[in-house]
Image 1 (cartoon, rainbow, N blue to C red):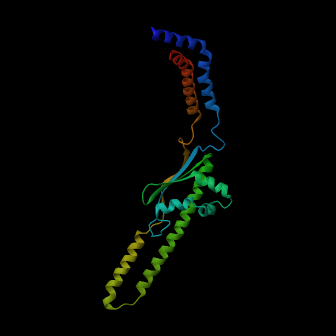
Image 2: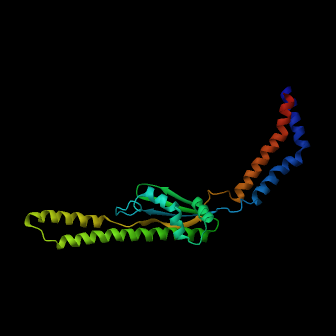
Image 3: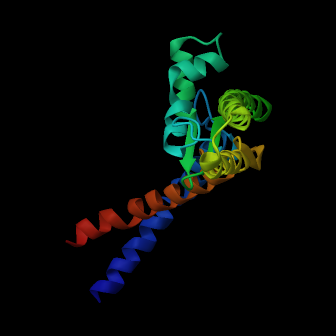
Length: 226
């Protein structure tokens, strides 16, 4: 009997407040759809996957060190000399480095405009490749110089075996050397995971409205019953 009375009061309360109960989810859903996400939304994610080089450089051939390099102000200042300190700090927050292995990492950048997001990461990537290539060539030149010097060096008959072994080691090292390379091309797509789309915000608004409507109808009667 008490349950029946409780349900009757719920139904009566629902009828009494039918207009705000129906309007609340609709209004919140509409507000969710049109409500701006913020002053500087990040809707796009540019991404590129890179394999580090193999030439013995302590900075450019180790993914952990490379991840620090990309976040360093001197490197970013070299890429974007026109930016002030505040802009560089904002860029660091939007620049992400995901280490996948000892030799592979993913570099990504979040931005509001697809073309601009792509261009920003493209400049960062190209600057890294340029610096990496310079370091690679320096190491390669050193090995070439050593190979040439060793070939021109006159040695005794007893030392010929050692000379051949050293040459073999140097030439093998040179063959194994490589500069950094792009293994997954640079793309800029809708991030999907950064912020909510208008439709998702509208659905969330409706759900919140339904929850509030439930509280308006049920909670007062629950306290009254108590």
